[in-house]
Length: 174
Image (cartoon, rainbow, N blue to C red; front, side, top):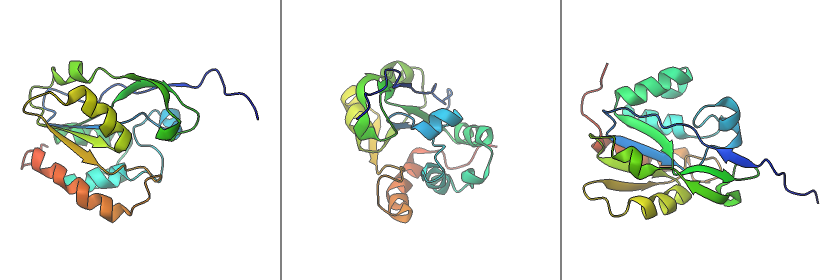
């Protein structure tokens, strides 16, 4: 058995938000495919883009990555992770060690329109709720993970993810 590499600390991405963000979706920490591509939810089997595209009724998965991010922001959706950095070999949340929390409270204080925080998966919910549980007026929503490792169908996940629509403005921004 080979020793664990010493350079296994993974560092997450900057938040994708603006002053109009109404819904913030938090994952745990980007996986290896995402880190390599420098893109949120880059693994081809991750259901995030089809799931959030379904909520917004937009074909986000078909768009180039920069356009996806712009469409999210235009619709009041932000992205980030609850973990700023951690040691991890591979991409599974179960392999995360020594996590350092992202400054969620600091970010949220700069989002005046924020109405809800949704947690993409169990670890994101567990850690994020610890940090945000006492904030009044902010809905906290647990979602089934968009990861292919969370083995329920995309359609079953989409039924739960649909609740996010109630936190967004009725009319899409153009």
